[in-house]
Length: 418
Image 1 (cartoon, helix red, strand yellow):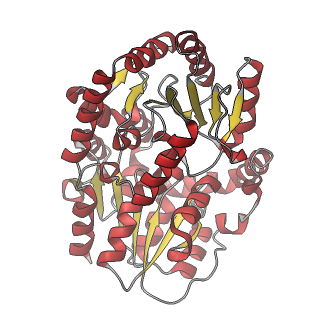
Image 2 (image 1 turned 135 degrees about the vertical axis):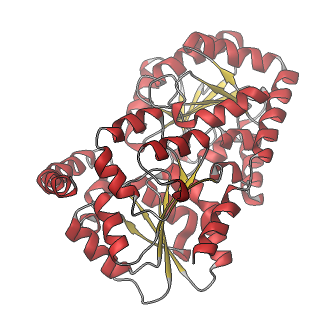
């Protein structure tokens, strides 16, 4: 099956590259650094190296605490970070600068993977969340490079997809030295796909280990002062089909709260222009974060069209709708607004973060809505009841505090295996 898989990959690679070219019309970064995607990465200095792979922005942010811990426990090692998307690459550069090495992960072609490993020469690979690459894992096993899947998650939908190619998945998992699962459900699904019990541990969700830096807290305070005293909510990481619902909810809110401000942050940068046009078409006065100026009193929408600032913008609001949840995307991380003491509102589609939302719901730290009408009513009710907001944010922070420690458990495992 792996040979057939590789043959199919070689056949579709021209189509994949054509798709990159097509996507580059909206984001020019997609047409750059193609050599890295085929394994022609820069040759790295000859020194001990730990390799962390994080697909895109969310995984890079989650990996920040892990990278800090690796630096602390392995001070003589370089850290190589690979990503798959240009936005993930930009986030690595923004967040870590020159303190880590960085390039794209090559496509899972046998020759590309071999070239990359010969140039990078890592001692160990830590893969964030769920990336199962048969040729990469085989090549690492043949070179004696242990592979650990960290913060491993597997939704029911993903598990069903992998089950269709169970023999290939089982073969790939056999080459993994450890699977640090986020929760019990994730662990059970990996075991059902063929992972051995001795490979799998429930280490907890690394995203609970989020901390807000002093610099970030100061920046939030400055931005709040610039926005002024007005009701502010944020709709973050929205997807196509959600922006219209969010704007419909905001129109309702403006009828009750005339000075209300919506911070609207689309999930993907290639959608910034389209969402800005949608806001104007629907009659909203729009300010853009990329302009570098705070919204004026008459602006109803502040478009978050910059990269790497979502955590900052969360802190400006009092209520946060976390996107990807009114459409069947599976939701996004609710712990970032919770860390700021911002009330979390979500739609029903949160299968990517099932256990996190279950913990928040048990504690009374999240509000779930079904549609745009429910979203509008929930935000309005929360603005009208400061005591309810305080109770929810206190509950959410308690969930955060009670579930910290996943990073240290993973680092202990890495250290024991070294």
